[in-house]
Image (tube, rainbow, N blue to C red; front, side, top):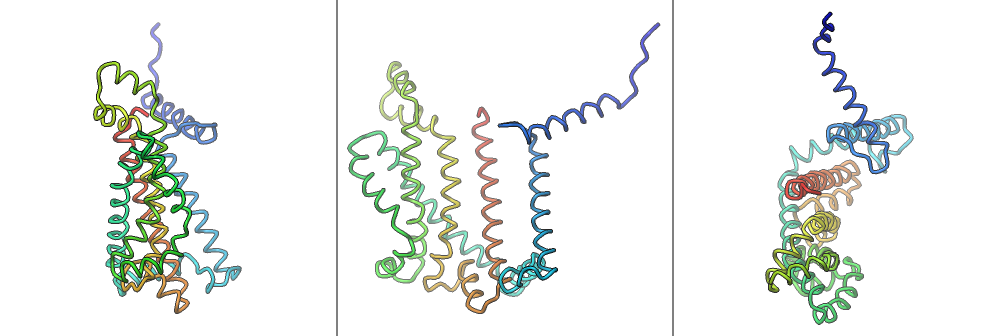
Length: 282
């Protein structure tokens, strides 16, 4: 007799259940893999738990609102700042400053870092100075930057650039040093010149880590925003936070901090997508 046919819809349901178990199991395995949907769900759940506990602690009176307002109070302040205080304009101004400084730092750091690792005379000449300057605290250089550039936009962009360039250039140099020497030897064997070694071998090999380092240093650039925008500023998220601090408007201070965090989160995720788009083989 013929075998009875399986019930319709039974196998797909079993397949989905098995896929879900595999995805959840990957979350707890060492260097395990999971689906992006499951990871997003876990991220949202974790954030909801933290916000829920924060809100409950605030409503129970365990946290003084003048020190740490509740998420609902921060959300209300964010709405008021958006509708009545031109928060969107300040966000646009700060974003423009950060990207101007970051792109300038990247445009300078990438070629300089590559040259530092490729030619020892360049590395010997520049690396000690860069190591010295990158340990200088940016806030301590605010008075000098005002003396050099005044209190205009140049000073703000310079401070953001200062906090980014000297870190990024050494990361780029390290990326260049990690290019396997075998790649260079094989390229020279087939007749590649210095320009081809740079463009077709080195840059292609260091591309994934270079993009990761750009993503990391962009986050560092945002961390210097408050320092840059307290220098005679009349616009920007840092200016908004600083003004709210003066009048002890803690919900508005927290709202400004949350905005910076959200901008950073969105930007970071977009750069991650870009990384996966260009380096699918990793």
